[in-house]
Image (cartoon, rainbow, N blue to C red; front, side, top):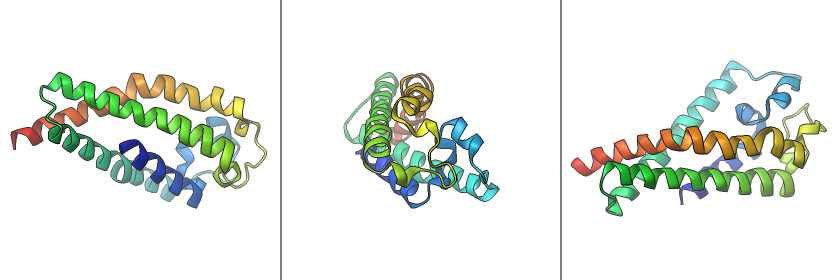
Length: 159
């Protein structure tokens, strides 16, 4: 459920306006865009990612752990880590491989960067998707989000 929410919401935002997802593109594309992101676009991205993606997912994950009777901080962290790892893998396979590379590649291109070589499958995977989902997610994002989720879950259990 969490992976579906994360990926469908991210896909909807990116299809609506790819410029709103600037930080989620490889650095070479961001560097070559004719019109760099505005402060308003950057601010909107931060607000969206914090309050539209992360906060609802941490709350949902904490409540699902509590309702699933997951007890003990260590078990909660492990539960949260697995949930966030599944979100990361779904992001890799659904967004980066299937949607962006196979189904609607043109909808995800930032205006002015059409034809950029990094949009190619191998270049996208090598320069962006695989390092993000095989290194950044499991080694940094998943542990941090699992700790946040377990901490909130511990608070909710005590209420």
